[in-house]
Length: 371
Image (cartoon, rainbow, N blue to C red; front, top):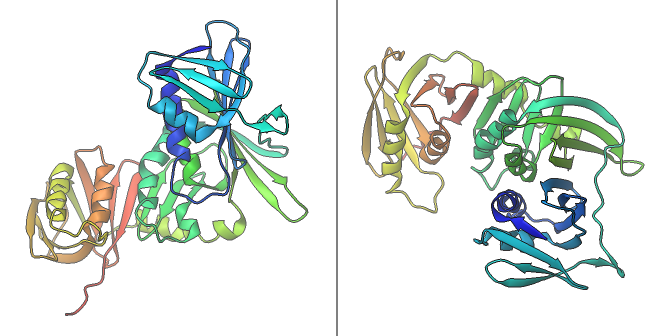
């Protein structure tokens, strides 16, 4: 079987990015290549999720192989030839591209393993979700989760309801959108990384609850297009959902603050990058003392380096105000901004919000410690 490398490699790279991470897991991903007529199915599972992607072949093929997912995906990601040739032998699959490689087949007793699908037996909800929404969750909300490795379990998850998506650690990212039907569910990072597969597609979404034992109910989600089917078991029990301070976070994102200023995003980001050159790279808590007046912001780092940034027209600062902010957190937010100008809102001695379009980031003010 011969495959064109580009499309196949692009899909394999996205899947690899989702499964090749530092999260501890007792489940190892397995990959299945299986043909039906002129369709090749690439199936991957670790029993917490099941992904199936269709590829159109030039002619009918008979092919079925089950192999270690990480090894195969890493190899495909490193291939640079225009075509990839796959051949089956009794105990291994042969891959011919830049070189010739053998990957062992996985057997269940004496029979080639077949991957079990995750099926939603009791669907309670069906609706469509735009691929733009899924992409925005990946692009914006993921930055908040990436900020802290010491977060509580719920702070490593994405809260989604019909009003949008919230992620939170020391601060928060509020992504505002509207879904067709009411919903409350949690996504994990592995699932969200796979959203890149959907790009700009319209995705059919289903949710259901199935009993896995007499005492345990599993929340299952299905994301489906003409060529992709992704089913996931999510950690969406009420005890976790209740730990997300949804109303409090949304209130902070939408409240009216005493001061509101417009800043050139590139000017602010470049200033912060220069100040961070002097910080300890291992220290994620690099702070800056921000002083505002009606014309400028002055940022003074803990090692007394100073940057001054002009405040743009349309700002509302009537008197002086100062606060201490985490420069790395601010940089992470600005890195996601594609807009040339951004709005800073502040003045309650608690937090600032950075708003552009449907995205609002909340960054807490830090307490100055007396020397």
